[in-house]
Image (tube, rainbow, N blue to C red; front, top):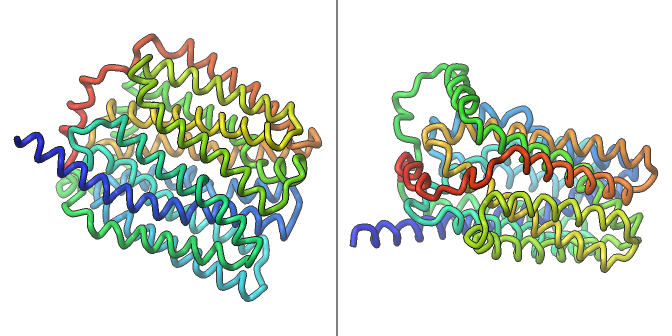
Amino acid sequence: MAESTEHGRGDRRLRWLLASSAASNLGDGIGKVAFPLLAVTLTRDPLLIAGLSATQFLPWLLFALPAGALLDRIDRRRAMILANSARAVVVGGTAVLVAAGGVTIWMVYVAALLIGLAEVVADSAANVLIPAVVGKGSLDSANSKLQACEIVGQTFLGGPVGSVTFALFATFPFLLNSVGFAIAAAVLIGLAGSYRPRGAESTATDLRAELTEGFRWLKGNRLVLRLVVIAGLISLVSELAQAQLVLYAIEYLRLSEATFGLFAFVGGIGGLLGAAVAPRLVKAFSRRAVLLGGTACCGAAFTGMGLTSSPVAGAALFGLFAAAVVAVNIVLGTARHTLVPGDLLGRVLGVWRTVVWGAIPIGALLGGVLTHALGSPARTFLTSGLLLFGVAGFAFVSLRRDAFDDESATEVRVLHQDR
């Protein structure tokens, strides 16, 4: 009876977190399409376009570590509320600048940087909240639902809405983006309870010592360390192409600004399917098998995109990539929640996100250089796809069979979480 009651509470807490995630991801999805489209109206330089993507993710490289240590000290729900509120203010200010007609590419860069700073805190907090919110529930299922919210909001709905509203009225998508973040902050008020990590009150104030403790644990856990390296390589190599997606669609496939959102819409469908089938694939095979197969599918999708000039085939292949990368992310997220103790999760996640998300601006800049050198974004997609096959091979030789498929570890880690 007590277990049933706890399960019900976990379901309610998860619903509040998912509702907030849905609102923020809808706004974020609108913004992720609107900002590149705004940049394209200001410049067609592939290096500047890639630089915008790099700027959005640069905060992950610089601040993921201190943000992770911070989240091991404070109430993670309150951190999400403050971060989402900050994003609402910055995007709202961007809408004002766009409406005034005085926006420049450098203003877009500044806005992207500030939004990225708040995103580091908000997204990291949402991730480390999952074990505490779910309790003894299924981490695979919870991570799948969180990924589904991200996919539906950012691509399935946000992408088309962002492109269409931008084509109608350039200020409109930024206003919607701001409202989405504001709603996300307000919804979290309904998530009752304290989400400050156990022992945070007595934690030493020496940030360097806390970060050292996280590094020491990660260094001693070879499996998690290898997963960090694999995740970082996937992030770096796939971003070579993803940062050039708007140029691939508009210049290579000759799509309009409005239909670019529909192109991304197909990716959203694929990602949603990936989130739906990932837990089933894990049960049918193993997390290792899903990780290896998903990475190889990512490589096949980008290789195909580099070889086709058909918008229909290109969109379908992008949908395959989205499905595969979402399945990979679910596996990696669950492995992280399962293997890392709750009181270290923020710091280990900080290291993880520094590597994985920090690789994105590096990959974006390299993708811009590669497109400039090769003369076509399609050739960048082809290069990225071939390299992803190499990452899959590296993962195959690095991870032993059934390396992180022990479900019994999940309950042990969950007991470390505060509710």
